[in-house]
Length: 203
Image (cartoon, rainbow, N blue to C red):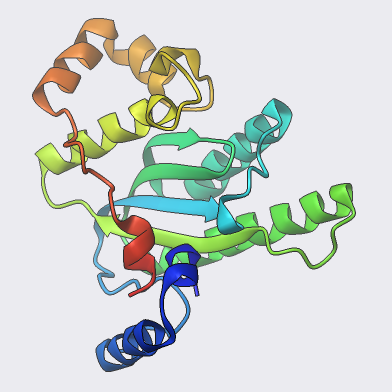
């Protein structure tokens, strides 16, 4: 079971498995019920939220590999952030099936390398990935703002611009600080934006 599953009773776990089976979802993995072309907010976390990307050098390497892997696969990368234990990307795809091989290579490669470097063979590093389909232009901009403010939300930075492992600096250089401030005022994410995603991973 994923993170929230550790707090469930045996009866609740059985009910979740029944619901997943009835909906045709895999029993122990995040469901991907929407597989259309379009924009998605993708989230992936280190298993049990371990801070396996705590070292700045590791975050920099992972950020480069994440961006390169997606763009090489023909995915349009709109925004990203890499934190010590998870990451978000806002992407656009013509075929949803493009994503699975990208994340398999990225997660598999980093798992092998990090475990070898730390002498922890067989340690589980990633808990797959979760996707959320973007519904509108407003939802897109809320997701972009959510990504850029994520380091503040999780207490890693006091200012979003102080966190170098995100696309915020690129937007500031391209569009300007005033544009970013306007988009924040117009499309500020709700307080509960992103809330419950760990719970959804259990359904």
